[in-house]
Image (cartoon, rainbow, N blue to C red; front, side, top):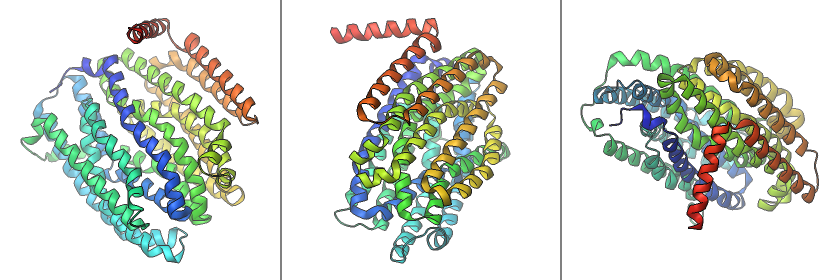
Length: 507
């Protein structure tokens, strides 16, 4: 069993884990790009709007664990950083948390099952011909809640120990199946009920795979399965704040499509969620980095504040530098890309939405690193209070703009909320970790210049002008990153790595 902090905080080890996450998430993205047009053309925009909500609901089921999954990852990593961990500690903490999560997941399944009539018949504006089918699909969906929550728990254990190779060996086929499974159903049925059953089978296989791998890598879990009642108050207290964020955060991310379905139409849901699902795939970049950094943040806080600050800034640079050129590309060619991928009608409805969401996703790339650091330092209460404060203003903004501006208004409110979130989290980090202020000026200038370039892109027309602007902006960003943001030792390290790679390629 790993008990030393050094392996977890080693830069090469962290980079290897990020690479594993890239492999595990890239393939599902490519499959989604191929399968989404097939699904839209086969089942229609209204059914695809419902399917997009089903995908969202499956991802949102983790709210029912009351934050215990992320808490488990945090506490295991923290113990490893303190080097006070024993096999008995891990076993007691793990099985106590798993027992609590199982109870909560069953309760969550019952809640979704009994709320289904209200969701289908009252909340969503569904044609009467679809209501029975969707109702049945949502009831089957409720059965997957315990599987989703318990899978999250076992994956969190593997992530705390940095076993990201195994996490992604499981994630890769399961991620592909999430998008490919519904397509495989099409030759036999266009029923949403059958699609959900297939997705449920995939979740069951994923759960069993995580259990088997955990028991193989951590034999101590095969031993005494002890429930320690004295741990429950602490777990629920710490996880409670995590849970508030787990509920309110995704609610503000996904609530818009429910409101669109209730106020506008299911076709409008499809016109909004398709660009949303497209541009938020950029979150795969922080999605491959932050699961590695979160336990590293928890451990580094116990080992060295200087190491913690450096991890924070390096994580920020990597994520932002990766997302900026992609956000700019999407913003410039929003209409052209949607017209080529889907059709001109879809592009006419969704291109402005895509541009606004691309801006919001880029801004959010800063927020996600700060968010993980705040929680990694053991202050989930701060992120929870922030989200509780934001929620009523977000709902008011949606209520104000949807009637007049439709889905474009939704995208604008979403992006404004993300901007406020990013700014407040930035100040939280500097409050909790004063040592990080040394990088505050550089981060602020980088945000300002990047937003300026993104805003200017909205006024450019013509493919050639857009292409020239994209090239010039990316070159400027690379030079700014190299000469202003990167420290001298980082530039030397990258130069050395590049030279070694070039020699290997040239033999």
